[in-house]
Length: 125
Image (cartoon, rainbow, N blue to C red; front, side):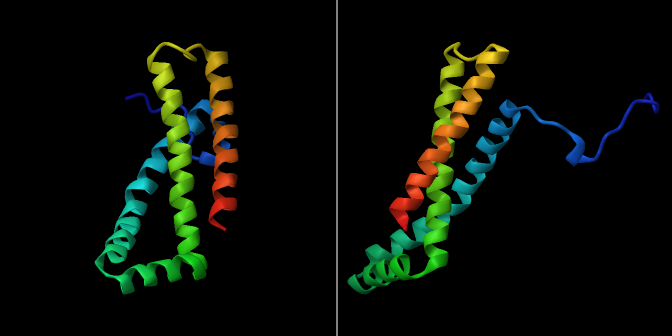
């Protein structure tokens, strides 16, 4: 092993391209969806258990800031993951594979996702 090779372990000095950021965020939102769905399944189960359970879930979702924030976080992750997934599917079909078109698609992915996330926030609150 060559001990003279450069080692850069300071993440703050590493400049990541927008395509890498979009890809990493796609993976992170997948993890958020996996974890967040547990909370949503619990609320769904409670709402189907009885009328009182349904009323309790409705009250929590209408009056609890933390519950709204969790729902908004899961919906935001879903919106981003969906947009990035469509971009990946288009790449599988042979589009946006060149460097410049990939950058443009990654930037468009971020813009579309931010717009959808803001609209989801308006809808939830």
